[in-house]
Amino acid sequence: MRSFNFFGRLCTAFHDYPSLSKIIVVSTLSSGSLIAYSEANTNNGNRGRVAHADAVASKKKKVVVLGTGWAAMTFLKNLNNSIYEVEVVSPRNFFLFTPLLPSVTCGKVEARSIVEPIRNIIRKKNIDVSYREAECTKMDPANNKIYCRATANTNSKRREEFAIDYDYLIIAVGAQVNTFNTPGVEGNCHFLKEIDDAQKIRRNVIDAFEKASLPNLTEEERKKILHFVVVGGGPTGVEFAAELHDFVNEDVVKLYPMVQSFVKITVLEATDHILNMFDKRITKFAEHKFGRDNIEVKLGSMVTKVTENEICTKAKGSDKTTSMPYGMVLWSTGIGPRPIVKDFMKQIGQGNRRALATDEWLRVEGVGNVYALGDCATINQRKVMEDITEIFKKADADNSGTLTLKEFQDISNDICERYPQMQLYLKSKPVRNIFDRPSQVKGKASNESIELSIEEFKSALSEVDTQLKNLPATAQVANQQGAYLAKCFNRMEECEINPEGPTRIRGTGRHRFRPFRYRHLGQFAPLGGEQTAAQLPGDWVSIGHSSQWLWYSIYASKQVSWRTRALVVSDWIRRFIFGRDTSGI
Image 1 (cartoon, helix red, strand yellow):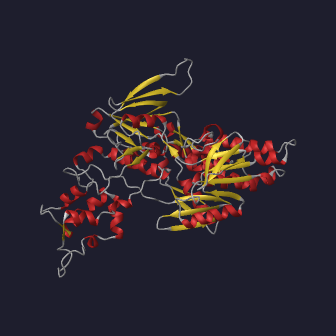
Image 2 (image 1 turned 90 degrees about the vertical axis):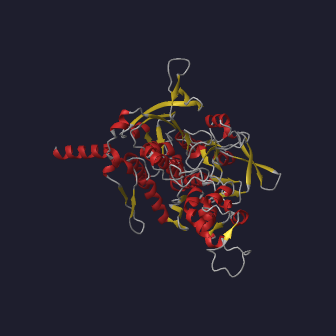
Image 3 (image 1 turned 45 degrees about the horizontal axis):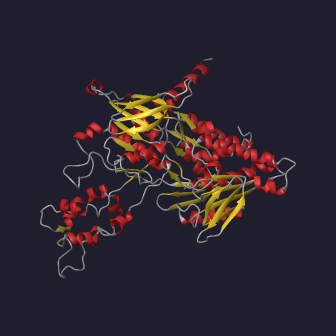
């Protein structure tokens, strides 16, 4: 009996205090074992931190967070300053681990295994956090209000509407699928953005095999029903195609032996390659592997229309349209802003953009107390050439009208921190080379004494802004943005007094915080057959079974809670032993 009591107390302790353990070990048998270290709940060590008496006594700042996705969840988990009163508003009362959505579509992972109720996350916080299951219908930055509508069904004919005041608003509502206004996509295609999408696809996949197994169908009808088309050769589309292929070859062959030969998987990609954001070695391997697996990949193929029974395409550089019958279409071609974000962009004069524009501190341009992060926003990195005159004046310490190498070096760290493209540019062209001007008179001792005029300085840096790149709309970016913004909010008061950011180029003093900088930690592309392509920092590319075990380990360690870690790992083990669940529930 004592052992049961001890076990019960131990489970309770791990449930209430996840910070007691920081290491998850995923034991594998692929030429050894792999240990993945989890960084989950790293900030829970601050649980015991007591707020200052003056901060407690003062009026708390109201922070409203829209959304429960990657950016919002990471912000909430890392925020630990008790001077804030936080209110979360979202129609979705859980966090969804989106990278495993393709695994749900074919029964490799259960839907409930990759969701964590948002109240489970906020109840462990030592700050004032509340949640409202509602949909934001309008944002009013002029009056610091948002207007919401309850999503829960009520007895009243009209759903309850209410307003919420805020001091700071954080927009992290994600994005929706971009159909590019292609006719028929909305009514005939499946998307893969939410857990409901994955469950719907799963039911349709199972129903397709059940329907094709009926005795009164012709071969042509079976081929049509079992023709699965994936529009978009990005990571989501490629992973779904790979998961479906594995399902056919590992489970369908046993459960539906009569219809296996009728299955066809087609990937339509408008560009010249699938996975074109990956290294060329991965792209080439993926295309060859899909060819060996009889997954048809049509490159340079644009979808012009989708009807109830056919999908129409046009080859790149051709006006000829062809059509083919299909049983199911997955549309995975890109993302666009949600309606609430579109309305807000029109209010603040950003109506012609594809996403909310923010500065390098994730503040929405033109609205000082509104932040946007994740897929709904993009950082509008300021160009060096826009500020080149001010940079020159700031570096010209003696106001001589010319710039020496030493003067530029004295401020180069601040410039590189403020303009990341400058740091990338200087890696290929060192500072000394910038001051090594061929027009200078020969015989000078060194380029230490060379002085550049404003025009020469502009000419030397004329190509610096070509290094600018937009951040990808991935969970990794949103996760890092949420952690960065939480750190800023935690240190808001401290940095008001002691700014830690770079020197202000336009103005005096320093910025409060260092600008957000994305650190790419690598990306995976599961290709089926227990093979995954991994592209990690340092131009390291790994393809094969060992990368698959790395994928298992990383994705297990990045789960938001120990509950979801246990569920996901148990789903993988269940699939290895018993195969995929084909109930369609």
